[in-house]
Amino acid sequence: MGEAQQSVPPERMSFLVTFGTEQCPKAEGDEIIVCATQPEGDRYRIPKPLRVDDVSDIAGGSWTSAVESLDSYARAILPNSCSVNGSNGFTGCLQQALQAWHAERRGAPNKR
Image (cartoon, rainbow, N blue to C red; front, top):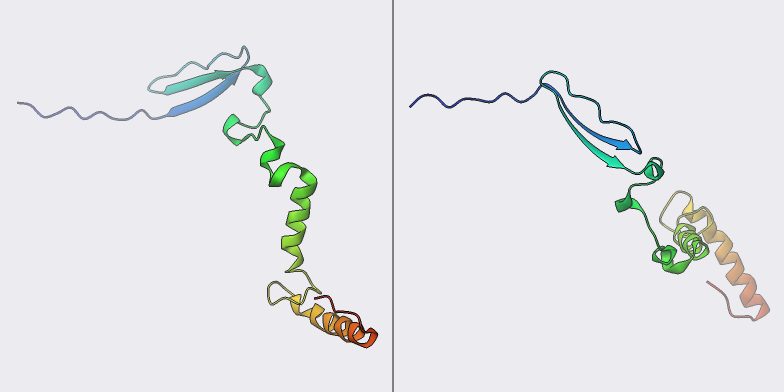
């Protein structure tokens, strides 16, 4: 038996998406071109696997609730938060201590 023939891969392979009535380019020489055709309306759209069709999937239903939840997460690491997380989180500790002291002086329950 003779030696097995070794195949050499093509010099160039292209995977393209064409839109509307665009034609797939012709292969030249040893080139391989694979084309997929999409409707013209999808040219500037986000690809289907990345799209979210229902806004209720995002943070419980509305953009307002999404922003509020992100704000509540970020509040703990912002300056003046009295937190060990984030930069300058400790700067709010004196403010909280003074608010507690004033609440005690007035006889009201303190809010922490």
